[in-house]
Length: 193
Image (cartoon, rainbow, N blue to C red):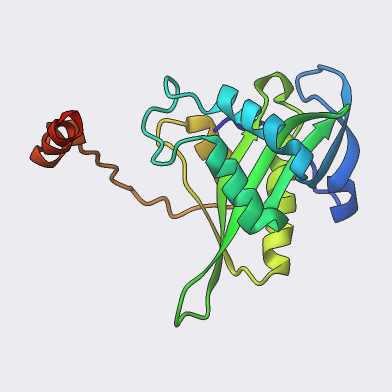
């Protein structure tokens, strides 16, 4: 995940939604609005994710970035989908979900995807998106927030640690090439016949 490396100052909820932000690297000011994602944003969010979450950069992401991921999250958890908008252009997004476990008093918020256009890094956009998502998850009863990222994504790891996430747990990702199984070969033979 692409993350902004700098921290933005603490701001009120209203200020987090829309404000002029100066680039920490001296790149000037930009009017950025953090708002709920709309149906009209789906293609822009998908296209930005295609540029950020590429297989060559993140080959071991256990989820893949595709149009169904974006549409499904928007359809099921639209109240936890936010975009950063600058001059009518989507330059970042946060897509989350609420997880309620049966027979548990805990409700979890999950940061499923967080991305910022690399051209707009240094404006505190990732922090503002995460803050807005956090606010929405708390409003709906989340008591804990979860996030996962590739362990080689050191920028994301630093960002999330700065934002108060901790207790990193190793997660083993395994794969199986189904083309090497008897079941797969049998299916292929049956399809040819």
